[in-house]
Length: 117
Image 1: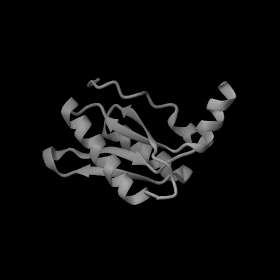
Image 2: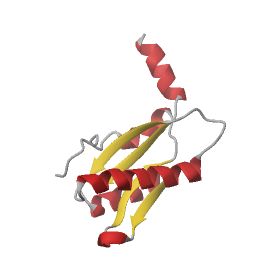
Image 3: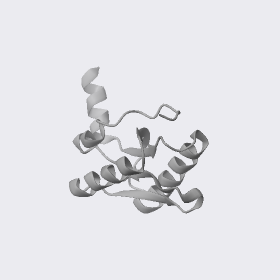
Image 4: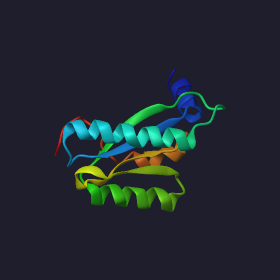
């Protein structure tokens, strides 16, 4: 049974969204949606099944930019959303669909829990 789940995870796409926790809760949802939508436009492939979405959190803009730099360095395509309103700037990012071990670099980020830090 566990090997069946591991095999499924190797062949199933996952999109990761990282959102800043230093912005209001309602904006966290909006910004995560913006990033996921934009990434979907850029990385969609009709050959892939629908991806599972994993929502993760970072404390602030600086941490989000560090995460984007890390992903670039590792060759993981992503879209970082820039919110022009409220002087927010970069607010969330979403990855391309990832499979298997390509997901490992995202394991260190905490799951989004829906609240500010």
